[in-house]
Amino acid sequence: MDWPLLDVLSEPDRRELLARARRRRFARHEVLFHEGDPGDSLHLVSRGHIALRIHTPFGDIATMRIVRPGEFFGELAVVSPGPRNATAAALDAAETIAIDRELVTGLRDEHPQISALIVEALVSEVRRLAQQVVEAMYVPVDKRVWRRLEEMTKVFGANDTPETTIPITQDVLAQLSGCTRPTTNRVLRVGENAGIIEMARGRIEIHDFAALQRRAR
Image (cartoon, rainbow, N blue to C red; front, side, top):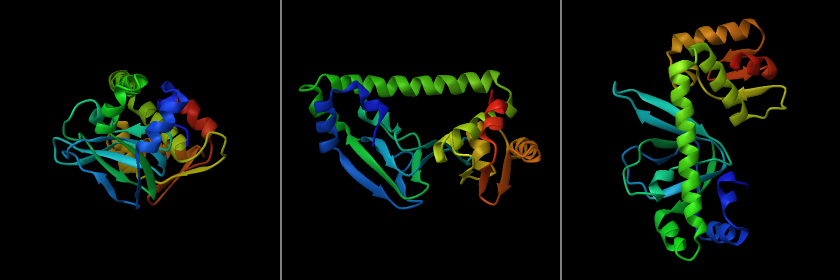
């Protein structure tokens, strides 16, 4: 499995880090950790999909992000001790490589490039969050729905696959898009009438990814 995050390390440092990290496996719907739990490790996803969810000020639970193989989450835990700011749950059978804070601290003196790994993780997350803020402030809601749908197509399928099934509900897509379910449903109905997608119980089927990309631009 290739994780772009580890590209900042030399090959020997990369091998040592992975050899000393913990491989963890999770069943479908199993919770990796809960919001508020003590944070102690960064996770590299090697198989499956992980949903990151938060409790909103209104008492609801919202999915903020879905992480796929090759991506990571929990980077703050290796920088500074503190509670987890989201609940992580496996959407399907999943596997991660858990890199504990103690491991990073122990390797840092012998392998200075480990510090570059931490910086890269934080920079990647800041850039992602900054893009989300700009979208929330300046991108029309319809386009945000199409963009999240485009992202989910890449998360659960491939760009060159003619058809992809996204196993998420309209509620989850609305949460990812930062809008209401009725708004998401309206956008999806337009796409369904145009033959771009097809809605089904608990999933959205993509029939024309190129057309979807045009809507997201």
